[in-house]
Length: 265
Ligand code: MLT
Image 1 (cartoon, helix red, strand yellow):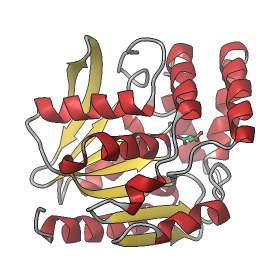
Image 2 (spheres, rainbow, N blue to C red):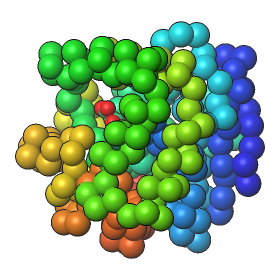
Image 3 (cartoon, rainbow, N blue to C red):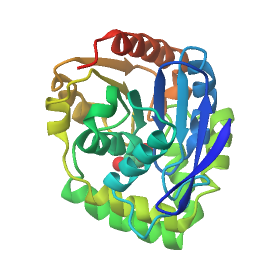
Image 4 (cartoon, rainbow, N blue to C red):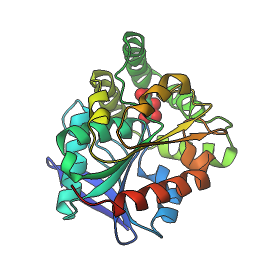
């Protein structure tokens, strides 16, 4: 079921499927909740799955002119509060993982498990910040070219079927939403400390051929949480939920069942 709610007077779209224990799915940049369609259909046979369009993406409106990861986290919290849901697993894809870590800082008592799906706790390097400035220029002046390059970069082996789906999704983006989120990602702080002191289990999922978050830079942080698991996808890039769907689903179902069995502290 697709539904709408509000956050700071802006419309927010989310999907709500299945029953029982809750998993929240947060999409990456420049995507929206549609990216989870197949994945969420499969997961919702086991759990209640809520996927949210982060502000400025899909059918969610922009809130102000700068989308910090904290603002995204507050939006997620508000959607969940309105649904009367208090304890859940959050799975964040890339930018969604940055927002999930900000959520971990602001609302740790709501989290039963965290899935960093092709994501990182590290902040942008000085080079990456400069690249963000170039991205903002490209988003504004060469939107189509920017989106085309971004789409292809997501995959280890771009398959027509998935490229088509992602093109359709990114074509719905507003320039404003993409700029606001890019500025928000550039500004985000390092959140290694959230991983270090998390009182819930953390599952990292990485793709061997990720062109956006290179695996060798990502792996060291998988050692940080007290209770940690890592799934390394040998044949995937930045979108394991497409390129290695079954492997990801199996790992997430196992991880979620373990988290939900743990006593609430
Ligand atoms: C994403 O996939 O969400 C973004 O590419 C992440 C980033 O640019 O840091």
